[in-house]
Length: 239
Image: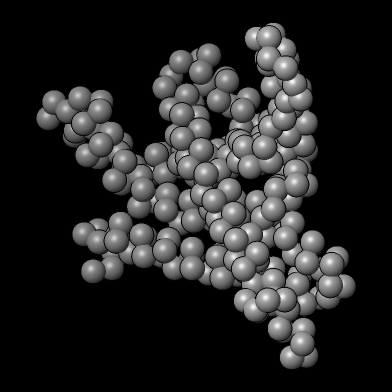
């Protein structure tokens, strides 16, 4: 047992350093995808509540399609389809190949699009939870749409949205494991390499579970802290 655990250490024969780097790569992919999803989710909510039938239909189609396609298929479409697009553009511009797209970019874009569809539902529900009377009061006192959004809508909506956004972040972390199919050396890819090299499959896949649990547990604490702070000043909130 001691020799097995030695493989997880940071010694000459230990896999600790590469597993740590893989964990950081998982965080990098997840954070990039989540931020992209937040931007896309916000734009999607705007499209659905703006009143413009064209933008509403585009936003609704985006949500239906991305929530209806398996996540792995979306990643494959971006990775292999992205190669073809890059090749076509590069050839049209007169550049010589071969052309490729990195697993990080493909995975980040794919998971970001998937997350954006989920986040848009969370944000739309939070927006609809803002009391209409509050918005009408803001208009009565002469607030512009931007002032109303910044001072009234966004602060109140975020109180409702933070728990749901925390769930979306946890989903993004777990979905990042699928990016290993592109060859990007994140947590799942690295433990697969380590398990295949040492034949200690149970040990390294257990280590992967621990890495993901550490990330998700710390993330949960961060979102709980944000939720408590957002509730400060509201009835029933923490102080």
